[in-house]
Length: 456
Ligand SMILES: CC(=O)N[C@H]1[C@@H](OP(=O)(O)OP(=O)(O)OC[C@H]2O[C@@H](n3ccc(=O)[nH]c3=O)[C@H](O)[C@@H]2O)O[C@H](CO)[C@@H](O)[C@@H]1O
Ligand SMILES: C=C(OP(=O)(O)O)C(=O)O
Image 1 (cartoon, rainbow, N blue to C red):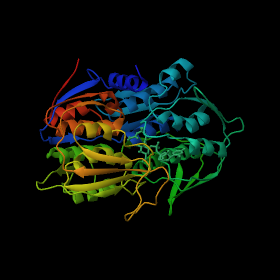
Image 2: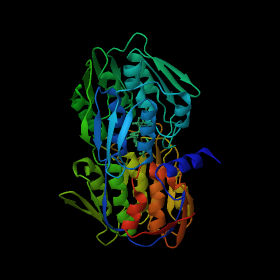
Image 3: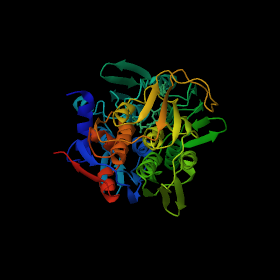
Image 4: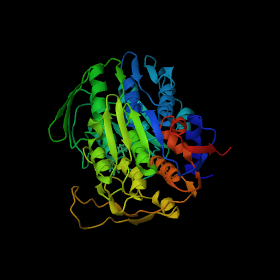
């Protein structure tokens, strides 16, 4: 069994899916209302932040996803007591007995998520030493961690990259640093925040990521007692403090989940209200959704996304860091572009390998050409990056049912949308990977009227 299948099965077990394969009869518009809880890309980091407090932390709106469960297991392996439940979405973290984890527990969590790398700073502060297992997450390119490790070294840590993981210590303590990233990495910015809040002295981070999830993590850290100021031009200043307390925080909603269900509404000709979604954090997505021909209503407690009838129109998208069009949005939205009249182009500028999922779409009847070295020309907003690729999607094309193997989280959701849009029956396997980031997606599909069953 290959590691992708193993990862998918582990994730499926963590979120209690009956099996790792769904059979979908497509062609029905998805209609109804669903709840969108806290963002995977904030919740998991706020969980790590709880390690920094001297008292209990309370996190609200936690989604029932396997990445949360992996981070919870890693915290428990380090002595954090966790109470609360997936049903209520409230988790309470008690860090009073933090201790080194045993290597068997760490090994078992190896390769399951990208979050373990963010344990470095908090564990150095708590224990003076940390061993971080091999990272997982979506296989969408190389995903180096050089910015993380360089930053930790600048704080005074000694970092040893071993085949089994990362060994890190700080025999002389940690101090403030002047750090500048070559690219505004989300994870590396979080690494700096989670470390700098408790070092001796002040840290200046230049070219920081400023995604809404980062701002929400800063809000969490400020509640804990940190002193962090976000300056113009992607500069963040962090004044280290001696101690932090626990927080009580309601997580920012998951804008990637909302954009994914919005894309499902458009592709299937449906109408989905995402309760909990907010306009401010989705403005860039909403503009593109409208240009394609989708409609939305901003409501008091959510956003209604729907296909208003008429033809869908092609667009050119360049993925980018915030406030640009997020890379995680392009995969689900591409299914709607297969239904637009004309040629759309998606320039993927964040990751070097995020179009693998389109092979299955071509088998289903889509007309998509991937340019592995990107495309020149045209008016560009985002400067050309050496790693970028482009997908050219020409529609409209009828999609037909197929056998699909999910390669990654967003690609998997895209495959679900394709199967729901297609005529006939599709068998989608490795759906456990979708459980990494989409809370209760099976119950939500049911609620929205999808016709599907699990292969058991
Ligand atoms: C768990 C989580 O929050 N995941 C999100 C996070 O991923 P993640 O934090 O991994 O993404 P980054 O912003 O770090 O990566 C962006 C780019 O920077 C490069 N890079 C990054 C770190 C480093 O040390 N060296 C380096 O070269 C990466 O290869 C990539 O090309 O932000 C991405 C960009 O918004 C999102 O798609 C992911 O959903
Ligand atoms: C790339 C993603 O996640 P991760 O960084 O957890 O692999 C994603 O959420 O689309």
